[in-house]
Figure 1 (tube, one colour):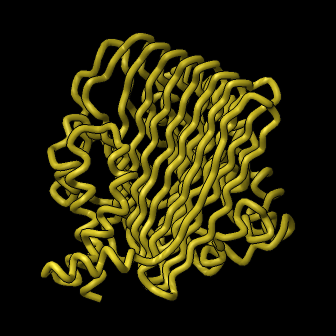
Figure 2: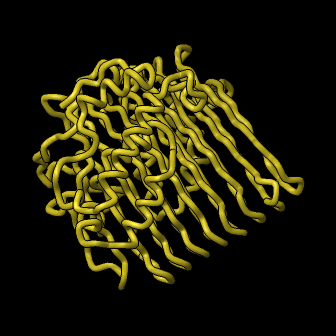
Figure 3: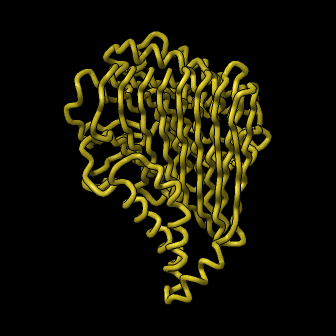
Length: 447
């Protein structure tokens, strides 16, 4: 256990690290000869960066100073969680395939993993490394060596567990794979750093649904990193529902690399967390690669919600679309930072991004920073951002036809979010998402 004292520069970070054991203790994972040096190098990178603050451009709108006042349990004991206490229904039905993580550690006893297509692997990172999976180790070593900022370095320095999904060439996994990540409290708020890998071979198809929930009243710190590698003509659909405890700090980075004609389809639905940041970095490395990044969020009270994206069009004839829509109430804050880079040799590229926010109170606030860096001539790129209140004419129209004000507002909020929700390419998902919107609106009126 260690207290995260105020960190304001490399020297202060070094002092903090001197009393903090970077990475887990002895165990099967540590048997890999490259792992300990990799963790140590990552701890050094974290010390060099310091905890991100508003002087760092990508973090100018999101303040993590709350962390500096917390004493965190960096090595929490496995929490006792009854299977009956887990959310039974996700997207309106029982999950056919569910891998459960509690405080960042895979719990096989709580999971349901049926037989998957031949060659498909779904397991814990700890088990994959302990079993000597060289493909997992090789990709992990490559990704850990990449300097992706302070919080990625922090995750790298605690490399221990998470989930691994490998789909071989030409294989289609028909059932959605659910990853249920559970955060729990303790005598001290737990801090955990799950590390996940998704590898989709050439021509493969897979859908991953991440559901993040909190089973406690208190807070915790979750700092997850997911690496996605999609081979030529692969299709990876990734859906994330973040419904953590309202006291939690949830930070997540997903880094995807797409080969020729590969497709990455992402949707993030944010409800929970006192502070949350969902960061996506996508590299379109092969001609014809395509990504679609969509999101919807509902935040109130004093919640802070950050969506940050970066799409790198590194190859010609690539395409990206981004749409994020959110509703804010109370003193909530939201951030959208979207960056599109088109390299010099990446001709015939399309890159579009849009952020729209609905402010239900005068004290809520949204900050947007769309960016285009275009170094090629034959491109079609656009960006836009809007923020405003409910349409007064539409609200009056509904009220004039006998619709109660609360119900009218709910209908308009649902209609506003529908554009983003409709883009989710997963059967059975729309109704549960709409129920979450209705629940949020009901809780808003109750407070």
